Amino acid sequence: MLLAAAVFFSSFPHVGFTTLAQLNMAMRSLGALVILAFLVVWALLSARRLGFASAIKVVFFTLLVILAVLTVRYAILASYIHGDIAKEMLIYTQTTPDVTMVTREIESLSERLVGGKEMEVAFDDFTSWPFNWYLRDYPNRRPIGDGKGVSEPFQAPVVLVGLENEPQLRPYLVDYIRQQYRLRWWFPEDYRGVTWQRIISGLQDPDLRHSLWRFLFYRELEKPLGSSDFAFYLRRDVASRLWRSSAVPITPPVEEYAEKRIEMAALEIWGGPEVLSYPKDIAFDGEGNLYVVDSDNNRIQVFAPDGRLIDSWGEEGDGPGEFHEPWGVAIDGQGYIYVADTWNHRLQKFDPQGRYLDQWGGFADTGGRAEGMVGLFYGPRDIAVDREGNLYVVDAGNKRIQKFDPQGEFLGQWGGDGTGPGEFKEPVGIAIDEEGKIYVADTWNRRIQKFDRDFNLLAQWPVEGWVSESVVNKPYLAADTAFNLYVTDPEGFRVMVFDGQGQLLAFFGRYDTDNSSFNLPTGITVDKEGYIYVADSGNHRIMKFGPLPPLPPTPSPVE
Image (cartoon, rainbow, N blue to C red):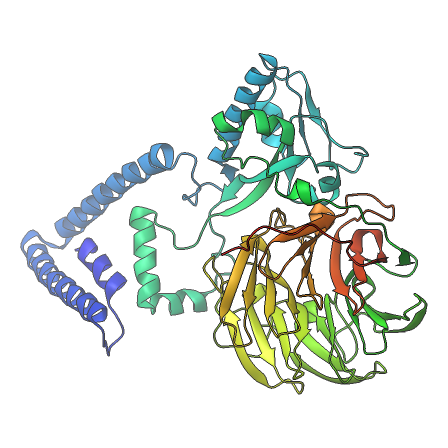
């Protein structure tokens, strides 16, 4: 009877079914209802025959047997079936199977490199537990704390780094290749903040009732397990010798880009820590003035063509003309300035003198779908303007591009979360070339997608970079008059240049503070003469480079 009741209440739909699936569910519910009614009648007749006191004892004993059987079943699931999988609410958090797999790989690497457990392994404070225990027999294990004391490139064959410490350690890991794994995981925490209203409304939802039944009986979860992750760095020369027999699926080093390196030194450097704080995006107006999104100072700074600071406006806040960590800027043909006010989830429009005119937006989470909730944003990152003055806004958190006219009227949206053509995972930079072709930095898919004016996909190509999913690894794009595309690689500390078909032409830059190096380059633009301007965010400066030197011809384009 209890089983029949559970099936009935978990599958009974709302009245008014219209599809075959709803009809099937209704028939199942009706069958369960008939069985339930029969069992209720049988139970009442049996109770009358046995007497009230005896009936209570039978019911109590039956419940006890059912609970005992279920207890044994769930104990077996928790101990033997889901022993290292956080599907049981009894377990708050636990180490994932990735940890033991990586430990076995370290053991294999050490045996092949040095013939024992003498290999040096460096790990930060985030991964120290449990790796300090798993690597207790390695005399050359090297704790590095939070990494702030590191001042020179690593030499250890393997380095383990938590994602929170990764941005400050990436400059010292340029000769390594990276894989990401889960360190600890836990049961989905959507039960937090539960109220009686949520419980009652949930029990009225047939889909939620069905999901609850599937979890209670089968431990099937609809939402993924939560996790805290770490990066496994393997030194590139070690990977090139040993990756083929590795248990860890590491991609071998790519040599294509190495042949395309060129040396470029900045002709001029503007700003500095006393003027800029983590500048993100940059854009020119019609007079050659450069507008800089001074992100951590929550303002826009304007530099004359000779590098003089000539204007500045904005402060932290959510009022008109105020910003909360802005990331993007664009200027249309009439000189109007548009700013992606990222964490106020809006766009602001200013006149050529920097006076506030208008704003539109507001927060919305579409769940990664490019449908509905138009004109709202989840952390907009960049803006591009076409020849008609229409705006293309990268709504990064919602994995989509939205199009507006200059007055903020919604014109269209494209994208959605995914890996297929026209879908995005963390889109950031956007650029439009002289023919109106649109390029999008599809960051976590590690590719660039190229579209026509109507957002039909024309081409896509991979980017050997953009490795991590950290909050500072946000690449930007710029197109020149020769239809070349300039691409920043923040945590690769370089600028890459592709032709319009995706062939790599050149790249330049490395990690440092000199005039040939970068620290988290983000925004980029190219003027009409081909001079290249880069927002060197981590060094708090703007760098001006000369045009690209003559380059050798490239092979046939990407198909």
